[in-house]
Length: 318
Ligand SMILES: *[C@@H]1O[C@H](CO)[C@@H](O)[C@H](O)[C@H]1NC(C)=O
Ligand SMILES: *[C@@H]1O[C@H](CO)[C@@H](O)[C@H](O)[C@H]1NC(C)=O
Ligand SMILES: *[C@@H]1O[C@H](CO)[C@@H](O)[C@H](O)[C@H]1NC(C)=O
Ligand SMILES: *[C@@H]1O[C@H](CO)[C@@H](O)[C@H](O)[C@H]1NC(C)=O
Image 1 (tube, rainbow, N blue to C red):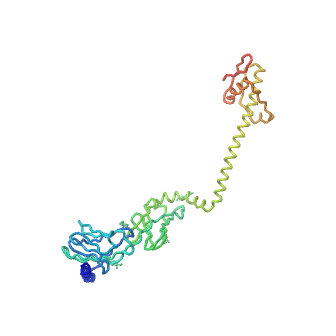
Image 2: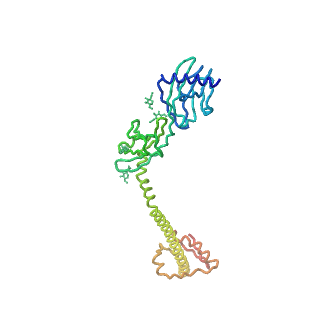
Image 3: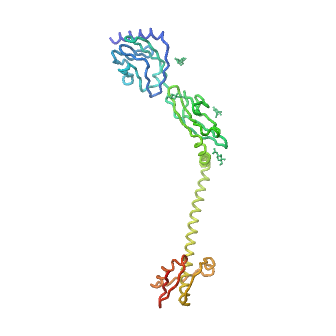
């Protein structure tokens, strides 16, 4: 029964394929394609001379196992859709509609590899222009096109990259690189003024960094050293200042007691005093009165102090 049917289909196919004009169809690997002519009541779909499906009353019967899950018939429209396209699906397909609307159609289906996504690099920036490079990883059957707005300004086929030089007066135009094969295309849009001005400083910088990573390393060490040095200097300065104040505090307290008069302190001149006095600072001996002094004199530099004397202890009020 099925063998008879196949023979009948084969005859239909052979008669029709001789007469009809071929419609070109393209598909992308992994994508799907819908054949544009509907079969509703009775008809056949074949690839080359080989029937692959039959339609009776809006129902499809698949005759080749490899199309079981990939070939569908939309029962409303009567259109065939082949999904999960592979390169091997390329070929000449025939539809023979034998009842209702009677016709024969043939289609040349070409399944292309999926188009690679293009990338764009800025290769050089000068005072009045910027050169962009559009790149793809594989170029088989792929064209690269540079668009300025809707106009093609450069193109190549089966090349891995395509340059474009943009002049400063065109920086605000909208540019895009399109990778395309007959089945599909992918676009990379470029904001030229941003890409190129950003590149001006940072990209040349990054290029330097890539090639001169040694220099960068040295720079980092240099920066680290100067930070450490600064910290050390600050620490030393603080230390010297503290020592100085300790000295000064002791001396002034003694002076005040000796003179027994109101004292006004002028601004402190650290350098001279530090030099004139020896390194050996007499630390106040650790009794309660001296520790009290320490706390109060802490603000010496910022404020003028007026000493007030009680009988025996040195107390200063701010
Ligand atoms: C289909 O593609 C072929 C080349 O593959 C071309 O010669 C032919 O003119 C195309 N037919 C149509 C209808 O576009
Ligand atoms: C277009 O590409 C070619 C290389 O394919 C290049 O020599 C030419 O400079 C490019 N044109 C522009 C306007 O950038
Ligand atoms: C890219 O694909 C769209 C549809 O997806 C189509 O309209 C457009 O013409 C294609 N462009 C190119 C350059 O092939
Ligand atoms: C890049 O920087 C230089 C100065 O560093 C400037 O003269 C030039 O205009 C800049 N180019 C772009 C495209 O911004």
